[in-house]
Image (cartoon, rainbow, N blue to C red; front, side, top):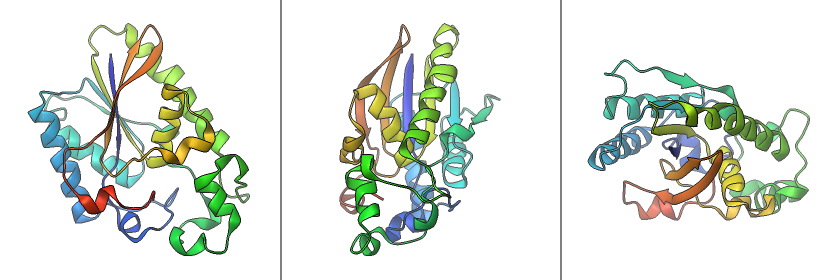
Length: 220
């Protein structure tokens, strides 16, 4: 079984370099365009989906609906599955702040994106362990059982930057402190194989668009 793991399209806060997290920010016009281009790319590659999961946050849900329309998933009457475990990590008091500015004076936020094992969230935020826990739960309790359903070959999961890194941490076996060495631009796609309950990464960072600015954009 193929598991495609995709990041949502661009938002205004992505463009401005603001920490987004649990703030429910909509796609920009360019973010919609990136999702449409990616949907067209799936079609050119002959990829259709038997099931689509998405974070319920508006930026991911909008991206999911665009992909579903482009790949005829919607026309076939299939249901979109929105799962709260796929929500972006909550960064608490840091949300809405520009990462480039705040990292000049806040060592904790520097740790958040360079040495996550030392990051301490405020009481309203999440720990990395909590995010990793809910993604492991999604993989074990939602994805792994799908392997036994004969009509499912291609599954798409649309979510967020930190969440994708939680997926890749497990699949690639990387440490928490290597989290942010993984580049994940908007609308990038990662392909994993699920076989006998194990995940293997086949392709990483597939892009169906060409944007030097997007590729060189800071991690947020």
